[in-house]
Amino acid sequence: MPRMNDTNLSPDTVTFKRSHFYSVLVVLAFAVGILTGYIAWGRDGGTGQTAAAPTPTAQVARRYDIPTDGFYSIGPEDAVITLVEFSDYQCPYCQKWHSQVYKQLMAAYPGRIRLVYRNLPLTQIHPQAMNAAEAAMCAGDQNAYWQFHDKLFENSATLNDDLYTRLASDIGLDVSTFESCLTSHKHKADIEADMQFAINLGVQSTPTFFINGLAVVGAQPLNVFQQVIDDELAGKIP
Image (cartoon, rainbow, N blue to C red):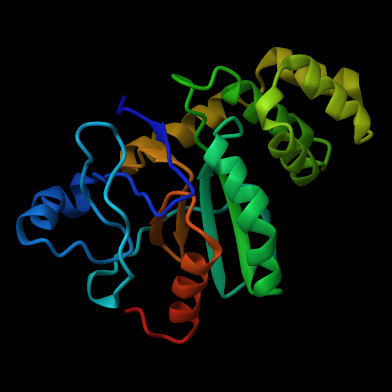
């Protein structure tokens, strides 16, 4: 399994490796120094952090086919922008993006963005990430996925099994059904399939986003998402 790590809210990015598309692009990026596009490839002294992302340019834009059917989403089904987020409820940078960018971004494009959440719990470094993802899916069984999703990020520093039960009670879920879902690990296989898809794609950190298939890696600030979305809406990106 590839090494996974969180990605800071600064414009840091993480190396993307997908042999199906561009297995040698990391080398090219360093060799010729282009460092352009929606992702900048390159490691920083083996620390797992990478070079800052430059201004996106359409010439090197790549679109990835990220399935969205069957995954929890918020926003119109026919929205012109589909934003897929691979995330982890215990990741501090995911929490920062959720608290500092998510609501502002949705408000800036009312009715034009569909956010699709896909699970990538970094279990090697976040011991509660899988349990939290399962808890959200169990809440989803009672039509409360997004409400529970928000509560998890609001409490991301104190995730534990008792918290999940308390949150379920607070938002009016059938707690017995919720707890049975958790203890049976009803949704674990689905979450693991999500993880495997992300790993096969080459995602190495959370959060990682795809805007109509265009990769944006890291908890980038609002203006980065706005620039990509505005260019996409204006038809500037092939």
